[in-house]
Image (cartoon, rainbow, N blue to C red; front, side, top):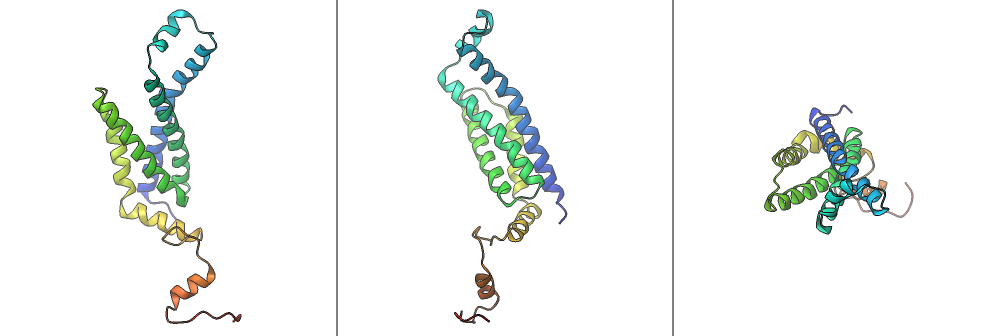
Length: 167
């Protein structure tokens, strides 16, 4: 099956988002790790000491979003059934985190726009159909539960009663 253009766009946007967030967060987390062992000079360690525990927790959440975005991007581009759900969850967490940052006086309008754009693209008809088809091919029904041959047969012939004898 050919990937819809929307899926490719979402995959690339998620990859860009994940890489950008990783480039922003992972160096700070690494510096803090080095600082814990006292290996940083005083002039480099001073700005790190000014960050509160809430700042570090937010940074950890953003780092997890970065990793999740890269994983969801790969799943999107490979049309994995779980990728749509992971991408939606990540965008929900991202937008909530950005909302907190907005009310804290640190708005990031570009990230808000990117997150909202990804959510809108994820909900387009062509993208939803692509992942529903991928889900059916993977052996999952529209509810997300595996379908057995018996369940599929019952769905095709609703009036037929199941028998225990092999046919």
